[in-house]
Every structure is written in C-alpha cells, then in structure tokens.
Length: 214
Image 1 (cartoon, helix red, strand yellow):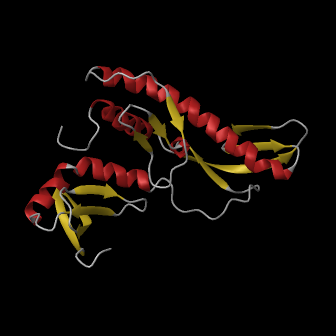
Image 2: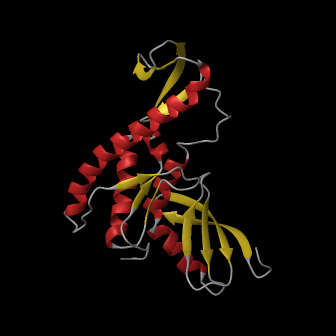
Image 3: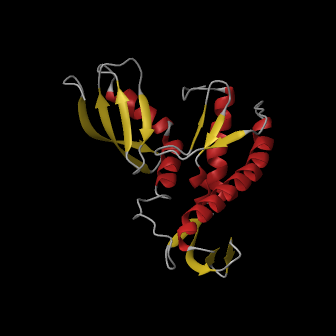
C-alpha cells in the first residue's frame, strides 16, 4: 500500500442492517466494492470521494454484499485433507461423513448421510473423490444453468450454456467480455439457491459487463 493510501473502518446502513466495511482511500478515479473470502467488505475509493456518497453506494449494493458474505462462509478454511474415514465433506449444503472402503471395484456414492468411497488402494482416494466432485459440479451447474437461462431470457440475456470449471481462490464465478463463463467447482458445496444466484449474476455480465448502475 502506498503512503498516500489511508484505511479506516466505517458502517453503512442498508434498511435495518448495518454493514461494516473497511474504507481504503488511494489515488484512483472510481469507487470499487468487494467482499473478501473471509466475508470482510472493502471499499476502495478516490481520495476526494465524500463519505456520504461512499455510504450511499454501499447501501445500493447492500443486497449483493449480504449475499456475497453468505457465500463466503460456505467454504471456511479447512485442515489438509487426508481422505480417511470420518472426514466431513459438504455437498449441496449438506455435510457427509466419508467412509473409505478398499475393494476391487472403485466408486463414490452418497448413502444414509455418508459419502462412501470405494477404492482399490488408499493412494487412489484423493483422485477418485475429487474427480467425483468435479463431475457432480458439472452436472449440477448444467442443470441450474438451464433454469437460470429461462429467467435471464426475460431480460434479453442469451447464452450458449457453455462454461468452464476452474478452482479459484477468491471467486465463485467470472465472465469475460466475450461471454466466456467460468465457475468454481466448489459451488457444488452450496445450496441450489446460492448456485442460482452466482449463475444469474454472471449471466447478467453477458449483457452488462461492469458493476455500474446499469
């Protein structure tokens, strides 16, 4: 951070909810608002921007900020996985205990609240389970995308449904200026309502690329 930047803690009012945020002032032309992976809200503002206008902008983005904070808590930091029986894994907002079995036939399935992982060797556990989660993410997002496209079509948004999956440290999804959609496969941990929110948000960028008023 440069010597010209200053940081202060502020609170904005959104309806009956108070939204705490860190205000970072630095030489820049526009105001940006983001929610960090731990749920912290940060507003980066020009040096000359008025606090009244900054608080107003926070309030305008209030619904988006609150939803982003909800999504942030879905993936709290976890200790390194060992892929052993007893570990907990989230799938579509439900926790499942892993049960590892050594068998000749490999596979993964959810049964009676357990995530049953069958492998021919323990060193195959990580690859098989991660592959299963990625495949499920592909299927679930495809299903949700079809439903979201029906809603988006009412607002003149169209897309060919194609998307990529990529692990991202601080994002659930992204959209390029050419309309290329990318989603974090960890979305499959979230409830379907939250998955819909992320998909619809990125679909909106197909028509309006920025987070400006439009």
